[in-house]
View (cartoon, rainbow, N blue to C red):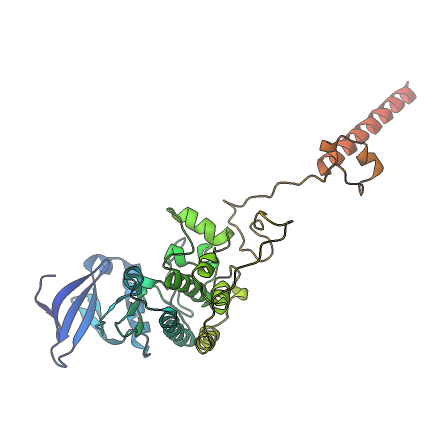
Length: 362
């Protein structure tokens, strides 16, 4: 679309970017205010799924009014192409703020997190799940005011717009149940919020990986490494909050952003003392591997990547074994040895019976 151009009463002034939809800085020629206008491309219109998601975003966002959520002023259609008119935001994305070191001290960072939590609590109360919480979808102005953006893959309760076999969300911030394609609840946003808060405080993601397969493997089977938070002196209360948000089992997380907001508010009202160094693990468990996938408290593994733990043989000097087992070589003093011994006994008995029966017949 060449500039200058108009869509209804909106005069397009600058192309800001986009993919399946294009975003422009525009002017409302009646009210005289600067707005952001998002219009679906021709390719987007041709994709039925993309068009339905765009319209769903318009319907959801237009019914939301919160100080920490991007305002939607209008939406309509121009020559068969739907468009959304939104608040034009000043400032930068939280991603750029983190990279540029513009997020301030710990108190300001937690203040940013509290604003995000309140915005998410608001949409969750209206049965809307964002499903794509990440720094790119948070705007922060020079005064530290936060705006939650982009409801492009948000899901309203009872609405299903996901293609079969396709999981929506940005890999680093996806909860285990989201990776596994299980039923999505608002708790996926709680998990993503915890990951994002880690990144806001430390400057790095708690999950690394160059492939989606590696990222998903860490999300499903490896505990998040939160120790960098202790290294930079993050308070124990904040450490515990992030730990609980990012629990792999949904029922072990905070069950609402009202709880998260209350906890953040409580933390901000108290002196922010650094976290204590964790005690060393007991000698018996030092260096032990994490529980296998599917163990209690762990997310279940997909069949394609599920691994079985190797059997562990009893120690050679285990005196709790039966006498006949202790007589066996050490390598056979286990379940495998017992099976072999039982098989041999059965074969000997069967052979004895065979010869007895054969002599009787003769």
